[in-house]
Image (cartoon, rainbow, N blue to C red; front, side, top):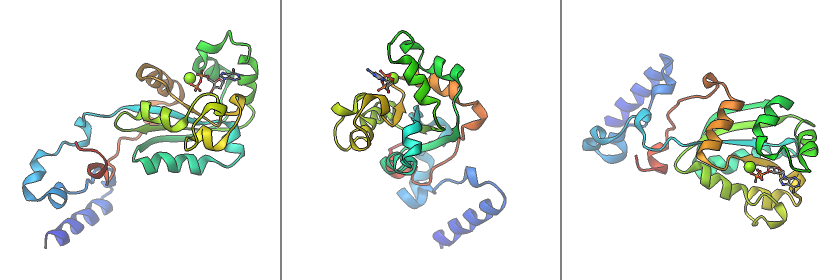
Length: 196
Ligand code: DAT
Ligand code: MG
């Protein structure tokens, strides 16, 4: 009976356009008493976000799907995604700490050589975890099992970018995305991947 009632609510909300507000009922997951103890998505303690960029070599080599899959599989939530050709202006801000490096001109040239796919992923310690998933800057030193360790061998073509700190992530997300391009939505499996 409870299941039927829940299903009916889901269908009603789906048809009334409230798809983004539907959450897996806590009563079903934890029992009837649990619902009052759950947080709403807006007061989750952990809403850390990071910027991930599939660089031109990753796009050219059709690795976008495999890279997205790794973050989905890990349990992180995708809140923004777009494909674009990046401008020199955005790149110079993104890599502002590297402008004096000898490889900077070739880095710009490579980053503008084809489209990139830019994403914002959200979740508990997503910045630190993403750096581990992406691997060492120099793929020759990256562990097998990391994106760079599995898909690349040279630092000049290391497939993917991941923000390296909270401040960096916030700065980069603001640089690449407008606020309205990031979606606040409830993931149905949220309570199965992280204790709220
Ligand atoms: P990461 O991308 O791991 O954060 P970073 O911020 O130090 O590394 O450098 C940004 C990018 O610049 C890096 O992903 C690839 C490029 N790069 C870094 N060191 C390089 C080098 N010695 N030669 C060529 N490209 C380099
Ligand atoms: Mg960096």
